[in-house]
Amino acid sequence: MHLLPCGDTGLLVELDDLAQVTALHAALRADSPPGVVDLVPAARTLLVRFDPRALDRAAVERAVRAARPVPTSRIGEDVVEIPVSYDGDDLAEVARLLGLAPREVVAAHTGACWSVAFGGFAPGFGYLTADEWSHDIPRRAESRTAVPEGAVALAGPFSGVYPRSSPGGWQLIGRTEVTLWDTGREPPALLRPGVRVRFVEAG
Figure 1 (cartoon, rainbow, N blue to C red):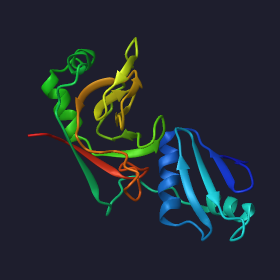
Figure 2 (figure 1 turned 90 degrees about the vertical axis):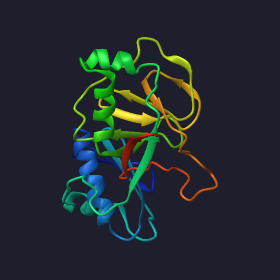
Figure 3 (figure 1 turned 60 degrees about the horizontal axis):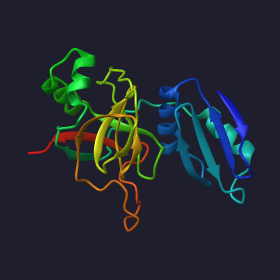
Figure 4 (figure 1 turned 120 degrees about the vertical axis):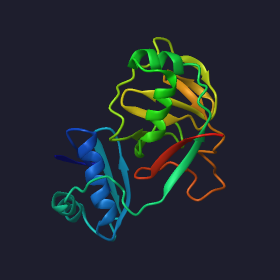
């Protein structure tokens, strides 16, 4: 663990891998000192934003070092269900890469309990991981110039849903009608770090 100041109101925690990030994020979400205003996880870092009127950086550092990382099973939290039509343009290619039938890919994707490890790329885009999903899916050799809104995709160890049409190089396995980003909703992002997700096959 390496701690770095980040402006006057932030502390950047550098960690070895995503598992350590999600475990520390879960611990601090459950028990952080008053004055911590935001936690922003990424692939190998966790940004802790705090109100300097309520606590100083030294107190934040002590809280981070004293935190006991917890399992990221998110027990007790609601699960967001996302219905998916599994008809993506890359489903057959993903099946070929994994040595599975397309229906087996669908079964594995819907059978996993996913959680949002961190956000990025675009507002409302969550990088989802699952203990039950051990596959590492290569990105497409050539990115698409426009991936449709609601596309459900895979890349590396992650799954994700494109919240709006944008360029992208992930492998598309399906689509959903669920709105991922809505500025009229509080909070606007449906998929936020720590939220659990179940993909269900749309009838």
